[in-house]
Image (tube, rainbow, N blue to C red; front, side, top):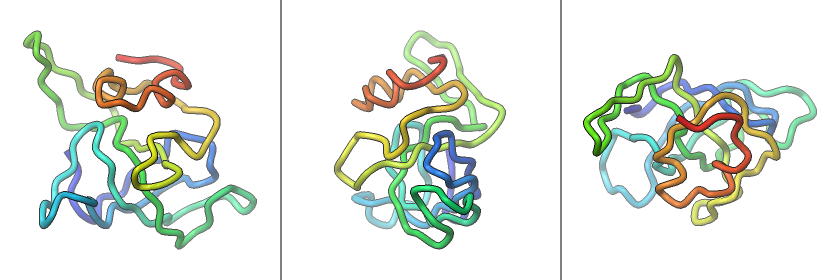
Length: 124
């Protein structure tokens, strides 16, 4: 569960390190984003020769969240940090990077981001 202006780590190799959430497309005036939702972010920190630069506005999907999420079997999943993966576009489910670092939630695959799930090291 992330709100507007949350600082989020980037879990892929696009060159961005930290991004800030600035909106939720197609959600109206909602201000909270959950696992597996597409968000609009601005790049705050990036490496010099990456695919994205500091100040770029891009779309991303939330793959890890510190706030626990309940599952249908009654269990909960929670991670150590908030992380996202940068997407190629708003309506595209393919990631811009070619590698995904760290674990991701199973809900990502359930919401249709199969390419991200296949690139991930671990799925919890």
